[in-house]
Image (cartoon, rainbow, N blue to C red; front, side, top):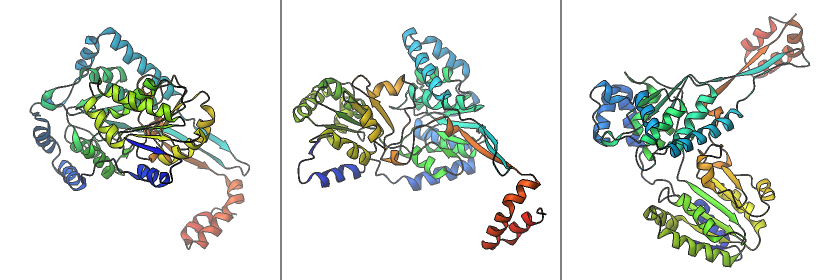
Amino acid sequence: MQLLRSADPAFAAQFDALVNARRESDADVSADVARILADVKARGDAALAEYSQRFDGYALASDADWIITAEACRAAYDALDPGLRDALELAAERIRAYHADQLPSNRDFTDAAGVRQGAIWRPVDAAGLYVPGGRAAYPSSLLMNAIPAKVAGVERLVVVTPTPHGKTNPLVLAAAHIAGVDEIWRVGGAQAVAALAYGTERIASVDVITGPGNAWVAEAKRQLFGVVGIDMVAGPSEILVIADGHNRADWIAADLLSQAEHDPTSQSILITDDAAFADEVSAQVDAQLAQLATSETATASWQANGAIIVVQDLSEAAPLADRLAAEHVELAVAEPEPLLKAIRHAGSVFLGRMTPEAIGDYVAGPNHVLPTGRRARFASGLSVLDFMKRTSFIALDAESLEKIGPAAVALAHAEGLPAHARSVELRLK
């Protein structure tokens, strides 16, 4: 874990190194992924079956081996402990309500020149959702991806998920039942992303692909952008906590570790204006690491990527936060509003001492699929708009064409496009 002090002469260089540190996979998987994509495009289901056997130890032999039925999802839901079922239902209800408020409105108006114009929003026809099948098989992630698609009005929602040796996660199946997923296919990896994009004999193609995955899945989405829409190319998770010395050190330590336990490449950073409090948090992190079931992962993350930054005044925190442009930012201070207004770049912000980031992962409502790796400078979290597209429309009559048409003719001639100009000129008086 790095300890940085803004008063140190070397701070600027140290902070630059922290901001620019590369935590994403160093493995160059682009060539392997390109071969897999081409193979699935050429051979369809046969390629998927070979990769499933090779990577997941699962044979896609009969039709029943390929798909997880709606009945299986319902059975998983019915078998859940009632308390856990209620928790999933509460999460789904809150996610659905928040995203319903994001639905855009169509526009239709006539301007001063008499030109009617506007736009119509429509959902994509089909969306694909990648659900990991290993350590990161989280039902909350399925809800966060599937529910916005359904709220947007997507008629066909397809899940692909690897099932190593045929094993499924019952919580994920229960979440799929709650979210109203239409199809679940037992395929994973870059090959599953290719199947969603290109289509195979069994799996019809989709228009948008969302959902987290490993380096091969992320690279497949990157290479297929343009064939389909994607949500984002996500990297390791991260949290920035800005806290004064009036917090409980064990709370802040737990917040930092809530992201460290995701992956050894995750990053947890604390900015505080209280050096003694920084020491308390560091000690609490060490104490809690010894007790966590995820200690091995969280320790690797904290030691390699964790940082505590001691500033002279919390007014320094907003510019530092903007440089980091973190996925999650907690403002554990008495009056978080000034900092909220000052910070321009963050995936999601959590206000006050009683709003841990983990509440946003599950039941708050806003989406937990957020930009990482400083992408919050130009990207936003997943929303219903990722599953919709806007079609503009224009309508003129003779009078409105007379008002604005000559300008179009002039610009078309200036650009050396006489056919453009003629198409307007022929309609003018």
